Image (spheres, rainbow, N blue to C red):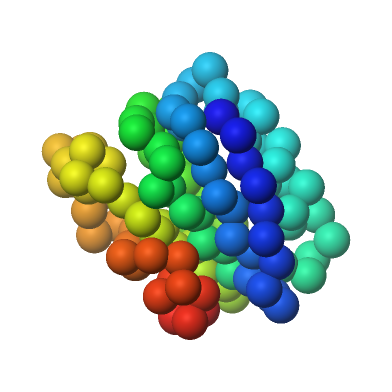
Length: 111
């Protein structure tokens, strides 16, 4: 998993590339913790356009992250999901658990 962060004021966009699974989750958590540590970031947009797969560990972490963002009075938005990721959310019953946007620009405007 490769993650590149872009800041937009109090929002950060994390452009993710590769599978987000139990094998790559610790590295992703470190990137996320680094982004949140200074307290300046309120909203997070995950650009998942180049993420072909999320496993249950990644989904559990995203649910935890969403809760953390809510505690900060911020938001977590998922952008650029392909049909496969949308299907994973549907099959797991999580399609309504996350706010999804078609692309990053729409997500950034919405935060």
